[in-house]
Length: 443
Ligand SMILES: [Zn+2]
Image (tube, rainbow, N blue to C red; front, side, top):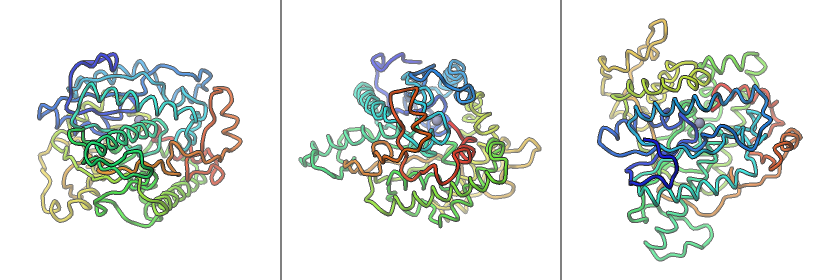
């Protein structure tokens, strides 16, 4: 059933999933949710950005078209939630382009943070806190923010604030340490009967090679199982990520000209280099443990449900075949890394239902003859958090670098000017090339 407000939620749930947009949780965690529902766990999905409009009114038609018809998207989400067997709640916040003109360029949407969004983060954190008090879940899942879309980063930062609050409380109750000391490293494991807190990997961005590692670098998160991450040069990261992105028809259509392709390649290279430097330069903010969920058995059901989001799948991925191909290739990489020889000896089930769906329109198996060891979704459990607000925090840091474009964009919606996301400078490549790089994966 759908709850109309947080105040209307009148029962506890085992698991709470926070979705920035009307499709993120289904794309990223649909298999995990189906598996949990099969074990009779109760699930509440809370979607944040579901409003028809916001403070920004004069939105160019081509920008407005990126968001689609909200009413149609809500109906799609309603059907998908019912088929997942979960209860759900829409918080009614406006998406990025409705909040601030800074987000009207794709460069802005994926690289900047409107000043006014600091208030949104604070408000959201407060609402999440209220929600968790009512629902008393065992587990809560927030987006990790892979792909750096502004809406995902806002929800991520609100999630970190809630985690800091829970960790502080747990620390006070558990060990008697003062939670007011600066730079205090707080363990979530000391939180008694508080919920386990997780970040999920945002699909489809997370399915592109190395974007998860890059996001962990950028938010200065450290895996307590380093071997579960792909470690390679920034050149190799760029090559792999570029190849995967260009395999999507939606990206190829945007990055058509050779000059833009070269710029896109360089854009990725610069991003990966800056992420690597951010990780090396400062102490970690978050310590995380990865957890894999095998979803092979429920993948056909998940794909059926994803098909409900027809208005979103086509512009972002082209079709569901692309999603399956990326998900399987991603799972193959995870299996090789995390489980290595243990799973490599397990043959894939030739009768498995998903295999028949992993075919191109011509009938060619997407993975050709490569063996697969399973299909996975991955989440990251927070085990320790540094309460100090780091200098390079993407949501809070005021770098002061503003280009003329953002000054111009800042007028009109009036309330705020964008802040440059650390590690991104629009002077390196033309915004159009950067926009082309990400537009195929927009939202
Ligand atoms: Zn999204």
